[in-house]
Image (cartoon, rainbow, N blue to C red; front, side):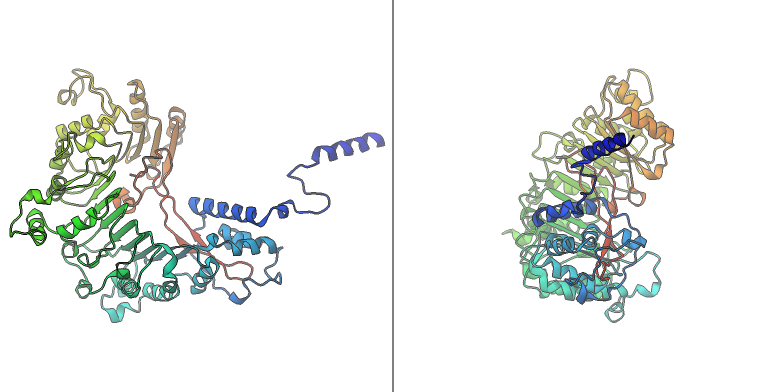
Length: 587
């Protein structure tokens, strides 16, 4: 019996020999055998993975640090045997978590500058956090995200407009302190995003940027002013309308992406908007929009422009005003309307939202974009039949309609009561592979078109409006749907499968609350089925900057909505942030 037990023990040791899940008997920690370079690479990959997926911590607390001076002490005071005994500690971001494991890991992580080069700030952020991240990042390119917005239900006393009162707003106080830390390091900013609820804090930032000689490494500049106002004609507060300064002295040689939401600049003298890949102009009142001449200069100065977004913004006025503005560039007092024509062959992604039909028609007539393959539309209230008809016709200098080349279409809102126009649009969308549609804001005829990819002769109310046997959306492979019950979605999938044009991917808004039977059926009948979390009522506001990447049609797009959480390591001086996943299917 003794020999049998001894034999079994020897056999067990042999089996467990070199098993990576069993600790060595001599007490060695195998991971400590990794060279610092490899360990550092693992940390970077872990942090990038977590930042992409979101930390999952919704707690907005941001405990203050007690001893910044002890942060990088070498005496082991950070405790290599720390136990995670609170929810905040369990949700530390990856770069902070690895500093709490042991002395060696902490030393490697602290020296890896890329772990600390993304700085996220909210009104709760401790200024010491910003200082410490900057210190650890050293000279690495900084990606800065500052969210100083306040809740919509904030007290009215915060809605101050004069400078003397606005300067005391909590959001502006945070911004003043943070910029005082960050501006000295503007030479290695790579990306900068600022979100505010009121204009004064934004004005403070703009003035600081105007004092700066330049940001030579800045590639992405995003300025968001979210103040809710029903007045789309006049900028408020009026005293901040005119700007006698230029940001960064026009010294932004590497700028490639620019987003200006509710933030205007000195369009005439600002020449830094050039060589861009993406331009996003949104929510500008009529009196602060660029003139047509200035608008044309901006888009023509970017020959590689890939994405153009105009959301309640664009060149000021209408064609008669556009002609007047172009006279400044002409040698005569009058110029023909054809002088307004601009061709943008590089633009592939076009987003148009909250603009009246006659304005859209005027733009499409004069700004030619023959190679658009991704189109997002979000309109409301007016009748957009003329726009739909125009999209189905070849533009000036083009042999095909704009819709004929569309591979990805997003309809967040498209009022069009003329059914033949909608059917004509469907007949033209022969190249469309992906479609995102909000049925809360489009006509139900789009549902009939999706459900009946082939119209049989003599049946159905719509069959008289289209040639029998017409195949709608023959290239369609993926749909993203909002506002439909499960049985209707299942019917769409079944009908297209029966017609020989099956859908491969289906994404459904979580708000539609499908039954578990519907989810199970969809998972069985399509290659990919996922639920996505849409923005408020699927409006374009949260989705404009998430244009579909047609090089990777199967990937889930992630929209960041960064915020702080508990920040502390064993010396109570590290940080956390959270992120929000956006709509799965973005255009």
